[in-house]
Length: 136
Image 1 (cartoon, one colour):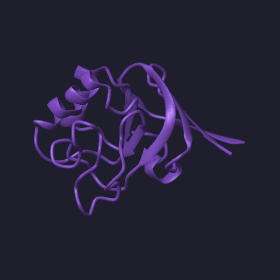
Image 2: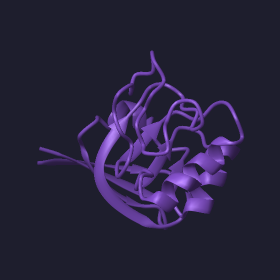
Image 3: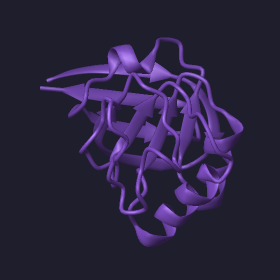
Image 4: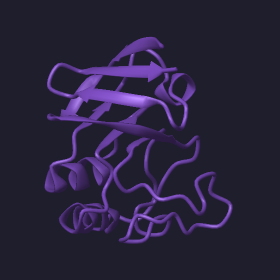
């Protein structure tokens, strides 16, 4: 098993671990993802997948400020990602992650969408800004 460690800046503290779900596309939490975590936006590279319980890794969000509340609603219903990793955080995702108490990091030393692959096992410690990527 190999391991890579990424270092980023904390947005929302906390710890989480689980399997990665990686997108090269930006996400609009209101239009891209249903409250149950299912990605419903046709043409999105995660179409048909579910973000619930994953370490969701994507560049940044786009779209409606109501997306913050969608992410919060997902956290309340247990269908949110366990953690969020962004290239560059934005106010919509940050607000939702704060409300939902979802650990979040951004501004990594290396692009996480390039290093992390869907299915990798990820250990996030947003308190110290590290992401451990474990591969078999």
